[in-house]
Length: 196
Image (cartoon, rainbow, N blue to C red):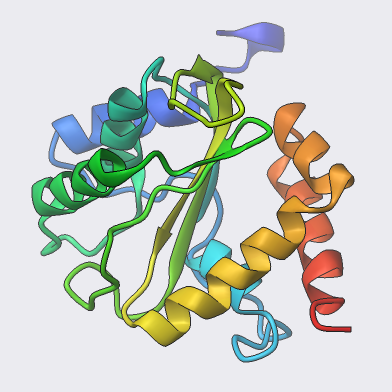
């Protein structure tokens, strides 16, 4: 697109092109959290800063979305992306990771340092919706990829994701494809209230 004389590119498309060209670029936000974010008290916010918030990620099935998430995740160059994709697909084979209300939470069955050294979340709002075989029958509009190096860290981030997904404002922000800044602000506010 070239509105107002500026070139603009779809984030997901640019990331796929770069990876196909063997280039390593950042897609989305910075991977480092601001110094004000304490990973002990706000592990979810810190994990999202290590990952990305993506808009318009393509895919009409869980398999297609997972393939794109693995491709776009800001993993180390040495990471075996194919092995990660296989683990995510194996986990989906056990039971759908669709949580309901249009949100899926793909993750490997067993947390491991094979893929990440610290928890990472890639929050992807889809270009459309994907059939994820959700129990409530609702198609998925958002996939939240969770990668963790240990069970303890996995459960810490997972509990906060579950907490945020109980808030209608957060689910609505995902459904309406709010900006990355709006989602981070809401996430930071809500996670601060976790356990209170």
